[in-house]
Image (tube, rainbow, N blue to C red; front, side):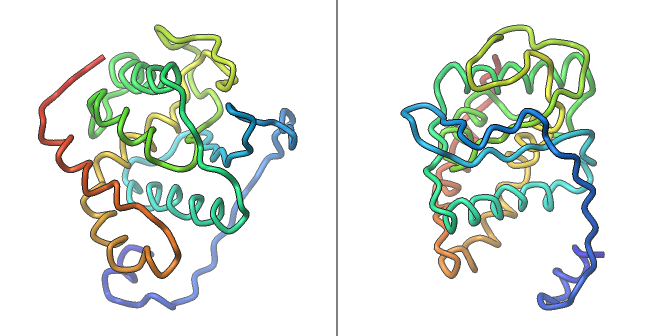
Length: 193
């Protein structure tokens, strides 16, 4: 319904949305990331419908807007964390279920380095990642399905996201111009972990 309203140009239509939220018992308001900066970590828990890919990807953009307005620093990914993302997405695709779109390691590297928030989530699988375990800023060794789906959807929906962002991102002080460079990476071929 939301997609149809958007495509028909009904941008100001009110829609009731209900969220069910369970408090995170492990939440630590004083958690500081690398380089002793506070950054925004967006948690994606439980199964996420792949059919809602654009909405899922927009969640990351909205979180970036919140980050900007709240004064948080950009998430500064570490190389080992990027390798974890690459491995986790590949493991999810090969060991859990086929993703609709499997981004290359190069695409994942680019997105994680450039997106200003941390894409995070609760473990959804009993299976652990095949490599890059026991990382300081990743709370689990188990596969996080929400993380894999969000990263995959961001890569797959990049052209559509950029088309929309180019219309209104500046109005919200968002800088997602890096997406232009992403299209070149997409076409360079496949580089898997």
